[in-house]
Amino acid sequence: MLPPEKSFGIEALLQLIQQWFDASFATASQKTRIGANSTWMMVAWLLCGSPTHDCYRAIASEIMQHAQEGAPPLLSIERRLRELVAAGLQEGFLTVAVRDALEDLITLNYPSFLEQWTHLADQMVPRTMRLSEHGRIPPYQL
Image (cartoon, rainbow, N blue to C red):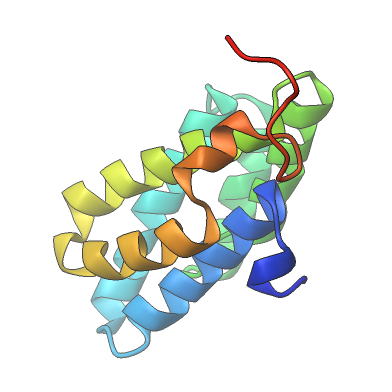
């Protein structure tokens, strides 16, 4: 992975998720870590729409491989995000949308971990990224 100052979009989001998980869950109980799986399943539903969709099953499968650790299913999330970008979604916009959705889930499920998320997210995936294209503001204005 690229260092955070060189990252954009999906790469930056994946780094954010991993760093937040490592920092927030390092000393958490096993019950809390396993509970993170419900957050990742909600992410699967948000990105894929239906439990019958292949991408949902792929994310769920990756979650189950690491169920005891509660680790984020980064490979499957990355694969789905890249599919959505290939389908035409702007990477910066998509990245910030997922950042915001995760922030909402953290607020609901892990309010004590929210400050850590916000601190990292503001540095690694700033909301201004939604209006940029690989870190550059497009040459047109709305």
